[in-house]
Length: 265
Image (cartoon, rainbow, N blue to C red):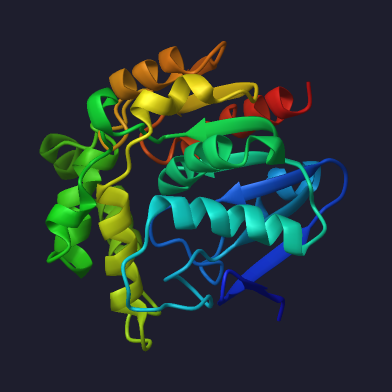
C-alpha cells in the first residue's frame, strides 16, 4: 500500500489516471476505504489524481494531539512534494475545501486552478454546520439529525412520503465500518476541533489561483449564501450552484463535468 512520510507522520494515499495533475482533498471523516469514492468517479479518468487520508483519518497516522488547519494545508503541500509534484490543480470538498483555502494561502505556488466545493470561509463570512456540537450523536441518531440539514428538501413530510429512500439515506449516514479501530475516535475528534477554528475570511483576497466555488442549492451544511460570500471575497472567483444538497456532486450529474471543464481551461 502506498504511504508517504510527511511532516513526521505516515499518510496513506492513492494515485490513478493520467494527464494534468490533480490533488483531491476530501471532507470530514474521509477514508479511502469507503467505496465508492473519488477514484470511482470522473476525476480519476480526466486527470493524474492523488487523494489521501488526512491526519487522524483512515489509514494515515492519528496522533492524539491538537491539529490545526495550517497543519492540514502543510500536509497537502508536503505530500505533493513527496511525489515530485511542484504544482497541481486542487479540488477541496467540504472540510477539504477549508484545507484547500489554507493551502492556497500558505502555498500559492502549488496550485494551478482551484475548486472549492460545498465549503465555507469561517469567521465573519460564515461557517459550515458545527459538527463539533453534535459529536455526541452516533449511528442512526446522527444520520436522522443530519439528513434534513444535508439536503433541506429532506423534510419530515418528504421522509414520510419516501420511506424506502429515507431508510437508505439513514443506513448510509449511520455506517461507520472502521469506528472501532484504535485511534479512530480520537482522530475524528481532533479533525472536528481544527474544523471549528477554521477562518480564512480576512485573507481570502490573497488567493491568486483561478477559483471556482461550487455547491448545492439545497445544502444546509455549507449554505448557498455562505458560498456566495466566499466567492465574492476571492478575486475573480466563479460561482456555480447545482441541483442537490451537500452531496450535490453525486446528486447532479452536471456538477463534476463542470468542475473538470473549469480545471482544464
